[in-house]
Amino acid sequence: MNELESKFHEARDTISQIDKTIAELFEKRMNAAQAVAEYKKNNGLPVEDLVREAQLLDANSKYISDDEIRSYYVNFQKNMMKLSKDYQRKLNDGMRVAFSGVKGAFAELAVRKIFPDASAVPYGDFKAAYKAVESGECEIAVLPLENSFEGDVARVMDLTYFGSLYINGVYDMAVEQHLFGTQSADARTIKTVVSHPQALGQCAEYIEQKGFLTREAVNTAVAAQLVAKENDRSVGVICSIESGNEYGLKLIDRKINENNMNTTRFAVFSRVPRDNSADQNAFIVLFTVRDEAGSLSNAVSVFGECGYNLKALKSRPSKDVIWNYYFFLEGEGHLTEESEKEMLQRLSEVCTNVRLVGRYAKDKHI
Image 1 (cartoon, one colour):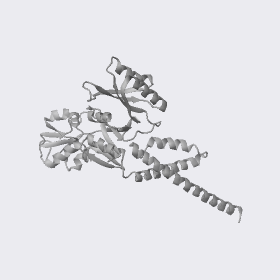
Image 2: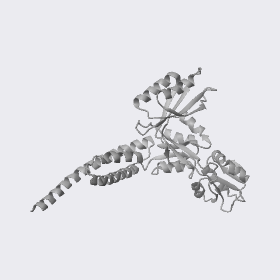
Image 3: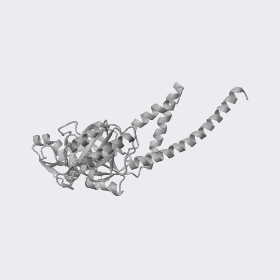
Image 4: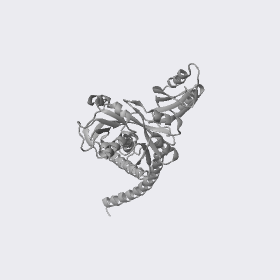
């Protein structure tokens, strides 16, 4: 055997030994991915996290000293991540995500975008969807917190305050409203439009211009379902493209909402709080204050003194005592274990009830 043949066989033996080690490490990595999948399922997190993947690719590529080999290693890592995500999706195929409405509702679209591999389960209203997670029927609920045009969704805020779930993600989704009717309808036959009150408000200028009468429905998808069932060419519905198509309706006019920047913020609720991590740069705190002069300002000042930006402060009736209110506060900044403990301790000194209900990464768009 000459020197070249010797090196060839030696290289093959080396590769075989490395392959054996890689196989052992691959199995360990996939077992770790199983634990990650379980955590994401319990905490209401999507399988894919592009920010985390980019961070890992950047950090891991620095382990390779050879510039040419590094590019191949990056591809190797990308493929490894894809296999890990595929495995996590397989493990989480049974995840059930509750939403309010029927098939085609904007909330279902949000579920499909955030959790494309989960089963979207419809419930009749916000409370039923929320309670489904509390009872264990579903792992997660996706519910609207706020619309950029119509404001807060008060019922969801109340569920957040009086319920036991945690918010582990907040996502912005652009909302477009369209006019649909029955297959025999057209722009001249429509006299009345049916939709959710917020959708009607978003399209108020268009409705007034056309002289339509209005009827309210639980949500836009339910409205589409009703119009399809009634089959009255004089009755139209304001809804999404998906809802109109789902119930076999005819598209009459596109993008009729007054504000083209119309966006709804959806919150992801789960039974357990998400562990503190570096990507969480926003949080939600609920609290009540003592009936004393300066109580609210004392509570609010805590956030600034602890170095956090106060993004929003909203009040809602607490319902247990007349003219008593709870406060829903959104803050910006990363909560470390120490700073969170300090903030909550200081709040407890000036508040009667304090609860950190969510940590999440801000500016997530779907």
